[in-house]
Image (cartoon, rainbow, N blue to C red):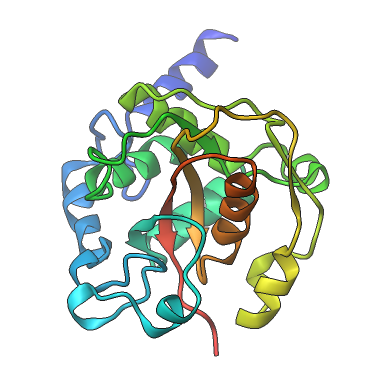
Length: 237
């Protein structure tokens, strides 16, 4: 790398990813970091199992009727601008510079159960081989690695669970999403009996993918499964 390229790289690394002003250590300036607090989720008025908005934070009717296999689910921010644009650049345009600020948003609004959950290991939401090849990386793995470096977690290696290739969840409606992920995961490397696993993904909408992966893990004998998503998106009508 020549001097000019190195200078440009170092300069860009010190710029806010949103307004391009001087950035703090996590890729955001103080102003943008403060403004992004407006998109933090309202956990006090969200179902603790699917994070659907519900007054008082009670378990919603759908989760009472059919509880998921995981113990708790958390989303740090709502999937809306400017976070939605940041995720798009990170996920679909492979802008790795977005990983640090997005992981920082997760840490700033971390699950209220994180300290009491007794997490033994962490697993990034797997991608199918086809989608990983097309995208070039797994955005959930990048977020997981960033969070694990901060919290000191043991990350389960890629290939622990494999995923069948199916249409993207974002193209489907609620019931179709559940059918689309049915039996798509396979555990390849056994986990310790009764260990508690934290799953990490970038965006959740219905929680169907988390629920299916949790079911696969629970069937193998793990203890509790917890789920943490960067963002929660609303279903399109």
